[in-house]
Length: 97
Image (cartoon, rainbow, N blue to C red):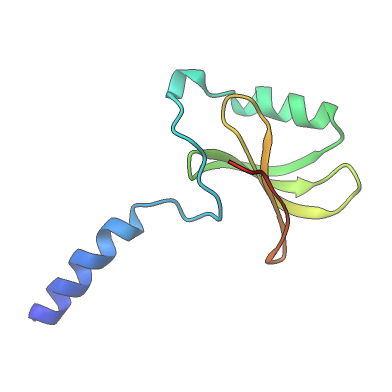
């Protein structure tokens, strides 16, 4: 029983953290671009958005890059700047912090 309590106490804090590959800086909720604003910005740059969610303090987008590659990408929540692009476990781009 003590072992399970230890396992749960260690696992719970890590389960509450972001599930994604990238962690953006902390930005106040009122400063975030809306889903519509980010979609408009990146589609104007040639991206295709299939699905989007908040993860790791970033916008996580599943879609296609302007060159057609299907990717998972993380965007800064208030600027819409690309922070990380991942394709099937391979990092194609990672912004320097």
